[in-house]
Length: 541
Image 1: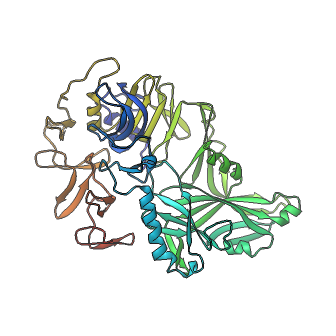
Image 2: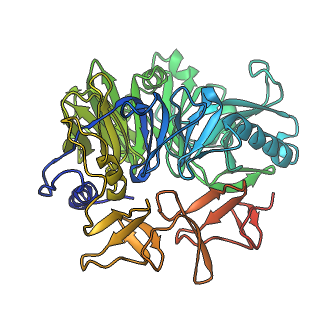
Image 3: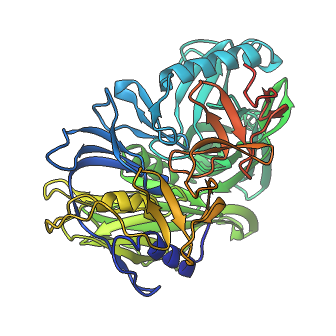
């Protein structure tokens, strides 16, 4: 979901207007500093976040979940976890998978879920597909992309030995926690040029094996977005080596998560597109990526490489495009798909920073000397200003983040108004306590019983469905915001703990899975992503 710059700024001003005065649309917004000791934090949507620390003498130092209304201690969580899936924090060391929508720990941790996923894949795919007739072993390579809110995908190898070094037959498979998979060891779709500039179409991995001079010598899966998985391969050419030429050609492969045709009973990706890395030193980039020296993300047809070193940040952009290249031997014009460096994208080079984060939409945010900046149109634009001592930030979106300094015991938040009102009751750094009761104004207001209502500009309370900051809420006939399951016009809907309408898969407190369409309505008596839902909407396991 993308917003134009003006709308983003207007929305940002609106959602935090209860904290500080709004400013003009093109000016940064100053955030109030609140008192609290934050050791670490992870921001989520609608002003929700998890933090390690305490916010006053009445709180013990612990792991807390701020649910938009109050801080709730997360029992048995001792070490800050990582982002997992679309709605979770995975406290892996403590074997806790915490649901940020329900505000509760799941019954099954990641390890249990992975085990169930693997067992299902073995029984429903490996044992049935002719492709894996001689390869009964399923070996996990690793999770693709750590600590981001996205779909959960793992890389596996299906092999004829439980030791990959001894395996003589193996297949690379990408498997999601929902049970969806694609076998990525079939389609290659590489356009290759030999030492004489002759074009060779390497449509499959088998095409490479059939060439005596060619071999795939390196494969690394690196990135993920909403629709694709990205990996790098290197092809060795012994003919080029003998001719004194660079024998390695590297490609970035964009592998669709969507299942295409079946190959011997197993689904292969609907599409695979390859790009010669060209201006990018792919092998060096892989090493730096593995060493956490850089972060990479894909947006549209662009790959962004974000390098951080010695409190500075550099961002380079590589564009996926078609070009005509000149052959170095005979000067032939070669048609290629490449990753080409955008030389005009050069405004963020060795820029000072204290911390950075990447939000759920893939946007880069940088914190430096009291400025919270977003990478927009190739430049770092200051969106908010905070206490200059703050040196850590966690960003979910432009209207949902937390910034803090542990030593100085200060923090600031950006959140939808109804979440921020709760923060206003905290003691400010200047020592002035906000009033317990919030004056009723147009917008969200907290009632004396702890519920929330929305007051319209005419002073009346809204009821029914309400769209606020691109999120749907439902208020009953008395104007009280609802959470949990509601029925409206013969359709069931689920509202998260923040009141926001839920879409996609949902695991309810009863342990059953349900699916909510994009309009929020619960699906029933149908099949979604291969899973059958009964008349009550529950997945039939």
